Image 1 (tube, rainbow, N blue to C red):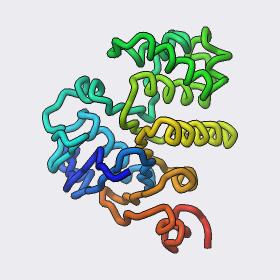
Image 2 (cartoon, rainbow, N blue to C red):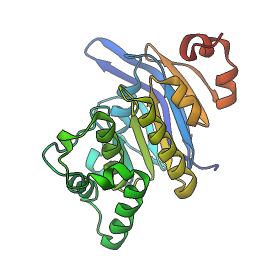
Image 3 (spheres, helix red, strand yellow):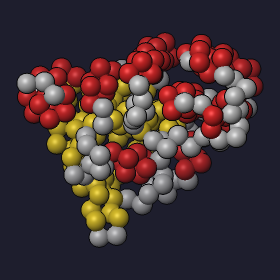
Length: 239
């Protein structure tokens, strides 16, 4: 795990006169889970939106060695960088199975698509039980599983997850965490995890960055974060 798959250098984003991201830099290696933690409004979602091609920005974003400046978001998806947003963006009146198939709309490898469907139903048995159920009628936790599953159906090389545990019950959070660990270990999938739930991120990420008011305040390994007194007191609640 030595090759860099995503490199962000001196990233600046403005909303009008508001300077939302201020010189953010980080790099993510292939095959790792990388956590970005910080409070609501710190800039986590803005950073992911910029990487996904949804925002104008200053600075440089390179994905798999390619500068993403001016690249269409659809092409970014085709190149294997998949963004699972905080809003989930499901098709509410489509069934679970139909939503999953929508994630594979750009893929031509139909046999592999079938294999991935089986993998997702194995990862999330609740989805298998509800495959004919409309997405809007599911619980929040089930919808989050479906959103992650649909993102995986796009066959990502890098999966960006924005607040996947927001508002979910502990048992669902545990299920999602176990699924991410299994994916990363068995497939080598790279995951960028943006989370207010710092405990969840610390439980699963190998390296992390802390972002506050649009700036990276700290970057380091899992152990460096868990040993950091400020992180422990401000974000984990351990004294």
